[in-house]
Length: 178
Image (tube, rainbow, N blue to C red; front, side, top):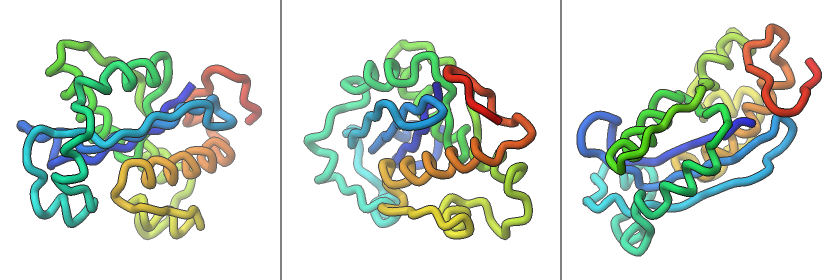
């Protein structure tokens, strides 16, 4: 199993920054089999730059659950799955930080679609999610929102699975033909 993840946050991983949105698609190597998506109340103001980038405002998250309220959903949907994200260290470390603050240990194998894309699809001018999706003609709706970016990353991941001639992606769960 794989979990394709995207998060939106109040800033970088270091420091007191918090999650504002999380989207997770559980994938069996052929298709999405489950998903989870929520805005998250960070308990602090969202900086203007982030508000402008994501469109997520303080008003939008005011009634949203806190991360503590969605942590069990995040843990269960990612259980026994490889954690997949575009720039995986950011998304993984942010979720890990939030879970650490709640006293949970969070260990998952990870797979970065940026690094994998550079090997499977060499020669593109950029491997940012937006430009890579444009190069591969993958639709990307709601850019810089967790659900939209994660949904595009699911399609990217499926292309990577299809074109992974060198076994860069660990095959788990179902037998997947090469």
